[in-house]
Amino acid sequence: MTDTLTLETRDGLPDALRVLLQDYPRETWPEHDNFAGLVAFWLDRHLMFRRLMTSLITDAEQAVDRKIDAQTHAGKLSRYGSMLLQNLHGHHQIEDHHYFPVLATREPILNRGFELLDSDHHAMDGLLNRFADGANGVIQRTLEPGAFRKDLLGFQAMLNRHLIDEEELIVPVILKHGPGGLG
Picture (cartoon, rainbow, N blue to C red):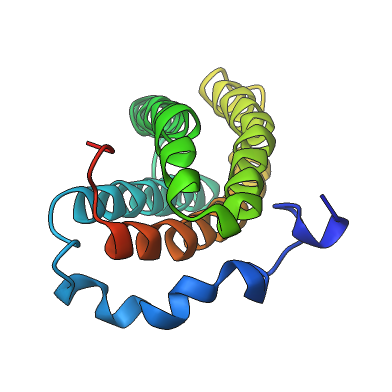
């Protein structure tokens, strides 16, 4: 993979991987016959990840500003951080072992995109480990919430980049071919 396509450096999918997005633009997705069910559920999971990240960052900011006490912050961080970690790991496993292989057979010209998303998941494993270490540091009071907040902002940026790219590659394939065999 070239350096411009790594999760850390890219600013979107290359045009060659956005070919179906031209026929299925994001703003038309909810009205498509193949949107309800799997696509809507899958996008809702992505929304949950985004909301959890926003909540974690807000809580970290409140801890830095001393608008939330350390014990309350630790409890919320433990609960929401665990939820984020567990759900992201499970989500990525399903995608890597089931969705991506099935979808790649439906649109072989996009195989490079599925490889890219799989590579993102491997890169995100390191981010998730760093997140867990940072969260544990805050909970155990060995890491300041401000340092954790900084890491969260970087993690949020990469997670959002990945989610957008994943949506723009996968949703058009499912809209075109239907969800058969993915549920």
